[in-house]
Image (cartoon, rainbow, N blue to C red):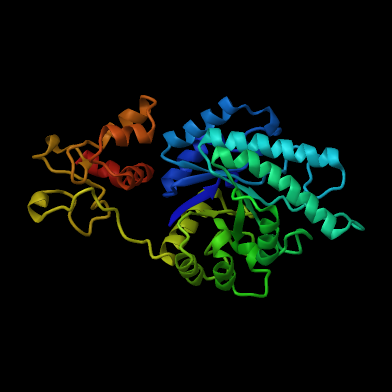
Length: 367
């Protein structure tokens, strides 16, 4: 399972700095709220989006996609009987699909509860039909771009339309387009009467994306929801996409949220094993090495005075750790570095970037 996190967790931070923090915490992907890039995302061009994608890639992250789609600007709505407002939402969503594709993303999470509420006195059947027609048109643009619209069930406390996974699946079937699928969110599923694992099992054929959080609006592990059964249900469903952390309470700070959330998820999903080098390290390889089994850096780097004059190298290679910093300082992306030096694994490179925030790696370099 791959783990991502939503960029608005870092309230008001510059995007490149946010990406650096996300990568350092150990995540592989970033999910982007468009309004964090521009208060009016209609002003963003595909060139702007491509540049955003490159910033993420340079930090070693994949752009998962977009969420919080209709927060800004105002005047967008999915179910309204006002055709001009509905048309604005359709055209805006098509624009977001183009931006998402330019960034390298593949998912657009459609939550936006206030912008889909059925108005008092409106016919539910008519509102649903209007929404399905709109979503079908959006999907016809998104699909060829490689973008999936992931419809998100939300609790009745947030909206009166698509308030359960089952209702959302019925809507997806009404849309009847392969680019329109299902997104599940732990906070939202917690409002249903069924166990979360059952909801996942019943809707697995439609599942495209997943958010990890808690009904207390905080991250996974910050509340009462146990994720071990959720992890097993996702495995049983054959889900191999991202599990993205999305929070609504940003205390105590983004770094703590990110670090504790991924630590909890790794434990819940049984992904606590250390980093493995590209090739196994034999006993003779480690003779005289400063980094032996049990050392917190084992598998990530090694250092031996008989190898590269003692400079720390990526474990199993003669590639100095400094070469990663040299590439990044030269403006190269992490992908370029990994392609240039295929003996280094992505996990090793990300671990080194994370370790650069501590003194552990620095102390080894000074020996």
